[in-house]
Amino acid sequence: MTNQHPSWESLVTWVEAGAEGREIAAHLAGCEPCAADAAWLAQTLDAMQGDAAFKAPPDGVRQRAIAAHRQRYPSTGHGKAQRTLPRRSLLYALLAAAALLLFMVVVQRQPSKAAPLVAVTGVEGEVTVTNRDEQTRRVMNGAPLEIGDRLTTGEDGLAIVEFRGNQAAVKVWSNSELSVDDLVVDEGQITALDITCRDGRMKATVAQPMAFTMQAYGNELTTRQGEFEVEYYRDDHSTEVKIEAGELTIANEAGRRTFSEGTELLIWYQTLPGDPLEYPLIYGDETSWRDGEALGLRASQ
Amino acid sequence: MNNPVLLSEQSDRWLIEQSLAGNNGAWAALIGRYERLIYSIPLRYGMSESQAADIFQDVCLILLERLEQLRDHERMASWLGTTTRRECWRHTNRRDRAGPDDPDAFFEQQPSALEHPEVIVEAWERYTALHQALAKLEARCRTLLKRLYFGYPPPTYVELGEELEMPVGSIGPTRARCLEKLRHEMHGENYRVTS
Ligand SMILES: [Zn+2]
Image (cartoon, rainbow over all chains, first blue to last red; front, side, top):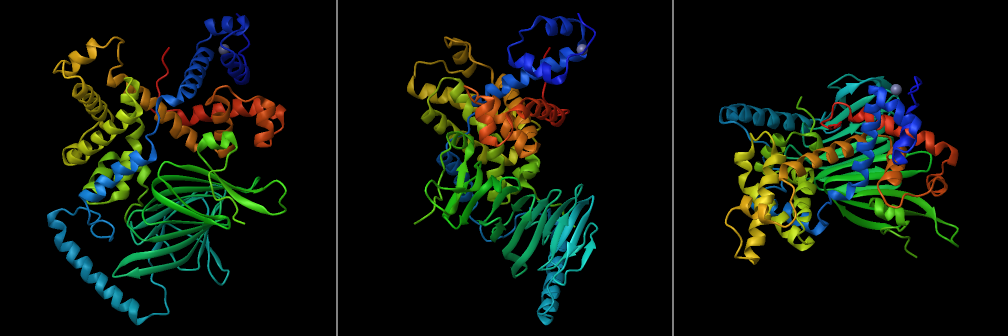
C-alpha cells in the first residue's frame, strides 16, 4: 500500500469505474478514512442509480387523495379556523377578537396609513429594507414591513417575511430581493397578496386560502393555498420553480398553465428556430429536460 | 410573533393537527412527504400501476380516518409501511380468495422473498435524505449530479458540456466538488453507510 492518500476526485473516478485500479484498492485496504469515503461514494452513487425505486404516484392519483381531505373538511377554503385551540384559550381568543375589532376600527380611521400586517422574522446576517422613498435601513427580528418596501438579503443574509401571523410566509435566502406590492384584508383575514421576487431564491407558503400572486422574472405565479420555491439563475436567466404543496398557475407572455404539487419546472427564454423573438418555455421534471421537450406554454402566434 | 409556516419543514404532528383543523395545504404536504413510500410498496411487490394507485388511495383514506390517533405516533413511515403492506394483501386476497387469512403467512408463501416493509422504509429514508441533501445544493451542482448519475446511459462529458454550457474540462472536477458538498449536506441526516 502507498502512504499517499488518493485525492477525493480520484476516489470518485475509481468508484465510478467500478472499483478497478489496484493501487487505490491496495491503499483502501490499509486506510480507514479513505475506505469510509469510498464506501460513502459507492453507496450514494448506487442510491442515485436506483432512484426510480421510489416512484411518485401519477398526478391524478395524488389529487384524488388530496381531494378526499377537502370533502371531509369542507369548511376550509374560507380561511376559517386553521388552528385547534385548547378550551381554556377561548377567553384569550375572545380577547384577541376584541383587540382585532378595535385594531380594525383604528385602521379604518386612518385609511392613509398601511396597517402593519407584515413582519420580518428569522433574521440572520445582513438584511435591509428600502422604502418607497429609497431610504434603506437594516432590519431586526419582528420589524414591520409596509406596502412598497423592498427587502434585500446580503451574502450571508436570511429572513422570513410573515403575513399577519401565519396566513402566509416567504422565506428569503441570501442575495435575494423581495417586495411587497399589495395586500387586501377583509374581516381580519388576508384575502389577496401581491409580492415580487426580484432576485435570488425564496419559498412561499400560503397556509390559508387567499389570492396569492408572486411576480418572478417575467412570470406571474398564482395560487390559492400551497407552497412553492422559486430560484433565479443569473447566468442563463432561467427560473426554477418547485411546487411542494397545492397548485400553482404560471402565466407569462407565452401563455398560462396550472401545475400541481410535486412538479419541478425550469423556465427559460429560448429562441425558436427561424424566429427572431425569444419565448419563455417551461420544462417540467427532469425527464422532459433531458429530452429537451418543452411541457407547454409555447409561444402563441 | 407566531413561528412562520413552511409546510415542508413542519413535523408530522403539526401537519396532522393542521389537517384535522381543515388545512388542506397541510394534508397535501403530509401526502407529499410519504407518497413515494406508499406508492412504491405495491410496485415492489410486483403489483400493477393501477393496483398501486388503488392501494395508494385506500391507504390515504385510512390515514385520513386515523389522523386523530396518529397525532402522537413517533414513526409515521413505519406505520404507513405496515398499513400499505396489509392493503396489498387485502387487494391480492380480493382477487384470489384462496389465499391465507393472515398477511404474514401470505407474504411468506410468495415465490420470491418479498421485502419486509421495514426494509423498504429504511431504503425510502435513505432516498429521502439523499433528495433533501440534493435540494440544498446550488442548482448547477444538483443538475450536474442528476444528469450524471440518475439516468442510464449517462451522457458523455461533451454532451453535458454543451447542455450545461460548461467547459468539458471543468465537468470532472466540478462533479467531485458537488459530491463533496452533497456529503457535507448529508452529514448528520439519517443516512447509514454500511461497511
Ligand atoms: Zn488514505
